[in-house]
Image (cartoon, rainbow, N blue to C red):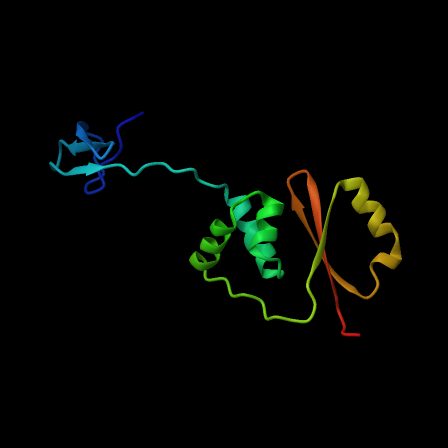
Length: 139
């Protein structure tokens, strides 16, 4: 690993200066500042964060998002708090979803009866597509 930049003066002249709490410490030769670098955690790709927030806005529960994307429901809750996403207003209707491959999606859309009387959103999920349906009008 290359030595990091000094956070105070952005100098490259940095040397190792011990270990504390299992983290490497450094000292800047230019300004004499001591610092540690942050641990790199298990970062989740921004693609999954965006998809999780989209699904949340569409009214899908945290646990359902967990099952669909394979990301912890607690992570989804933390992202909702972090990005200040507002929960959708509760309605009598809950969205239903189907996960289809490309050929199945084309066949579904070809049948015009599947599209009447419903709102629909289609989003990409890796190599598959997720179709979210909900009724537009109350019966």
